[in-house]
Length: 262
Ligand SMILES: [Zn+2]
Image (cartoon, rainbow, N blue to C red):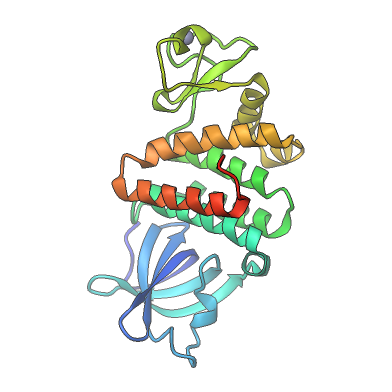
């Protein structure tokens, strides 16, 4: 969608970075313009009226003016502050992960309303619900769908026969699941339990309330997380900078959990 010289848009603030003495560059995710950067001038001064409305993970209404390189924020007003995402560390970590994943996996200025809606719904869930891991797994699976990387979970990605109810194999490079026969020739394929396959299908099929009703034992939750993360890492690693980002996330998770299995 072409932008007028001055335009109004809602947006979720994905992140901020400092610019010059008192300014910040915001990365915004909008319903109609996709992802874009905009300058918030003077926002680091204590007197700034903008500051409270442009924090990462805030959903705000913006008035933007086209600049020579980056657009300029002329007004911002919070629509939803998601206060719990700022006050509870566990919620903060999951929400920042979701925002960073959208930031790293989407191109600039390409409209993708379903991605916007998914992120907004995910932030609402992460602010309100207690099953944060389920919220994030559902977000990951649905985002993969929207980005065109829907994993194939019903038929073997090697030979296309329907998968049997047995231990199959997760193959990130192949975009889905391999049958035991096909996995024999694929050293990078990882065993995928039948229960984990069922959970992955449930996350893919949705809607969220269905997926949100299931309570997973920790080992199964860890298996599902591992497979989804492997696939996302595989996709992002095609970009070297993104790979560094995923490593950072893995380290953060490692530190948080105090285990080596993240
Ligand atoms: Zn096969």
